[in-house]
Each structure stands twice: as structure tokens, then as C-alpha cells.
View 1 (tube, rainbow, N blue to C red):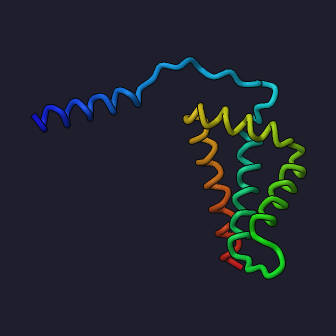
View 2: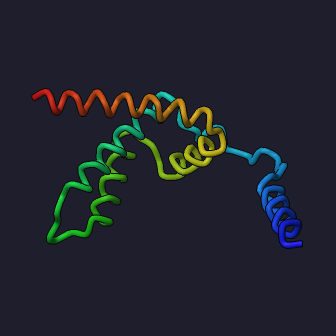
View 3: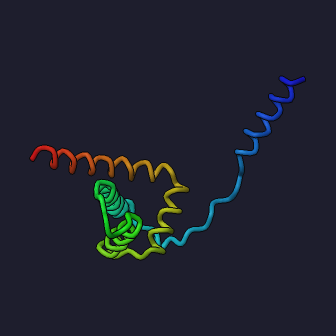
Length: 118
């Protein structure tokens, strides 16, 4: 009886993970093109790396993260709404996000190799 009950619970749990919801609607005018997203995410990850290596006395790391994030968005002339909608879009379209991150990793690897070769 325990095996049957356990099997039924597993089947119900797996079945509840599968859902057939329609595609969410996205504001296509706010979606950042993939190539621009690669550049933006590369900059964000570089900033994150810098922040994690800094030991601060006066500012909290959270405050510094917010400043870097805002500065990077401003550099790329991207608003927070545009960035958030793009993240939501690419999180739903995982194949595209995987391709973007493959390029981000290549960019970061190139930057790392340039920094270590000095």
C-alpha cells in the first residue's frame, strides 16, 4: 500500500509540474535585441565581479551594486522597465537566453585571458 501511495504521490507531483499555459504577452517594443543583451549582460557580470572583490568600509555592497547597475543601464541607454521586460522575455525563451549566455561567457573568458596575460 505504501508503494502504491508513494507512486501516486510522485505521479501527481510530476503531473502538477506540467502546465499548458498560453505564452505570456510581452511588450515587443521593450525587448533588447540579443546582441545588445550580450553586451549588457557582459558589463553587468564584470561589475558584479568587481563588487565581489571590493571590501568597503563606508558603503554597503548593496548600495554599490545599485549604483553600478544604474550606471550600466545608463551607459547602454536602457531603462529599468526595458531591462526587466527583456529579462522576462528571455527567461521564457530559454533557447535564446542560452545562446546569449554562451556569448557572454566567451566575452568574459576573453577579458579574463587579457587580464591574466599582462
